[in-house]
Length: 66
Image 1: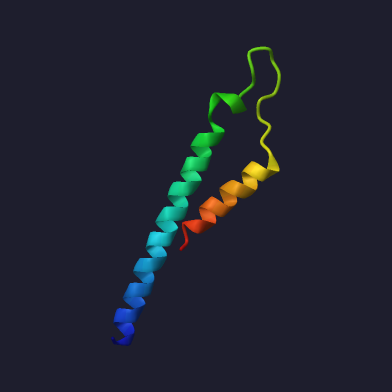
Image 2 (image 1 turned 30 degrees about the horizontal axis):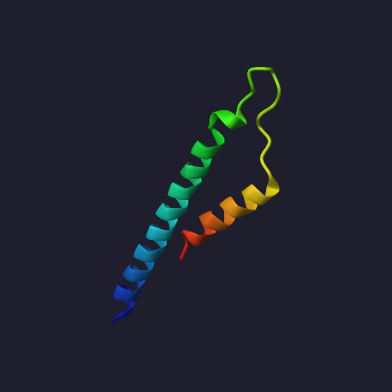
């Protein structure tokens, strides 16, 4: 395999990883738009999210790089 072919393969791999990361970030944005994260009918805040959930989402997003 020559140098240019290797670079083309690497570029394709990076593009797939970036696309997977973007898709997972969009999934997180959708998750955060769910009604449970909106102001509740009684006026209470519904925008709380646990740090454990955030860490799990970040791991999930990072896994898209592999």
